[in-house]
Image 1 (tube, rainbow, N blue to C red):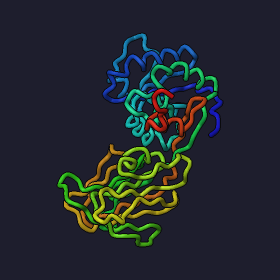
Image 2 (cartoon, rainbow, N blue to C red; image 1 turned 135 degrees about the horizontal axis):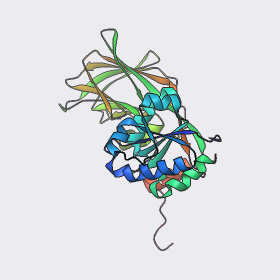
Image 3 (tube, helix red, strand yellow; image 1 turned 60 degrees about the horizontal axis):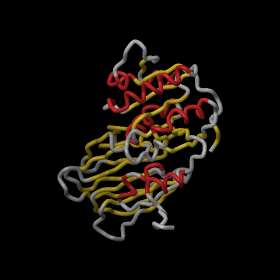
Image 4 (spheres, helix red, strand yellow; image 1 turned 120 degrees about the horizontal axis):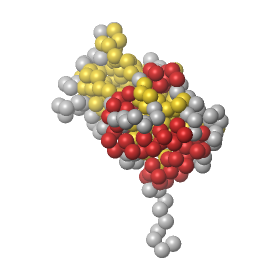
Length: 299
């Protein structure tokens, strides 16, 4: 990790779209940043849901405007809000800071109660930066690309609403690996290894591990186990049998799939920069969120 030394002159604020719960925190943060000399831009849909009075010291702006002007974006919400912001801003290389207004908050690591104290550290250049990889995904039908998406957490191919197993072939760098009959497959980045993949018994990957995890969902053959491949691998899934199959990108964008469709995945040319407060530790975060190594009572 490296420090983020420059004073951010323009700071964007992004909140949950169902944002009534973050209105007070957003206003408090916007006023603090304005008083410290920063220009504050609130993402336009967040601003519309929060509402505005004449004293609010911000301007509204689209994700495109934020990408063009912001030195840093502060996300108030949970990991879902962060995932959406990351995909929308990846091409603009805007660093992201997360204030947790959700539940676990693996990516939004600043508690609401510590928000303003941490902003002092951000403005004074004491935050540290960390780069996270994304996945590029394309869906190919009859030789033509019909959809493309980015994913920071994972791409999930699953059986849809019908409830029957799906079948597909897995290829890595053009080499056939196996046929899989299962409820689906999770293709996860290191960031996503603590999300859906974790609940499917996938491995936890440190964010700086250059790898992609392939985690089967309820495979018919118990020998189909999670595997880790190089971050530079070209992954292709070819649907061979499915009644109602779908591809999900970070659990937020869904594409319906048909038999003989292919989903092609590779490491994206884009990456995301997360900014963490001083003293941040990935392993300390895991201990807290996953309740590891709690001391026995009375010791």
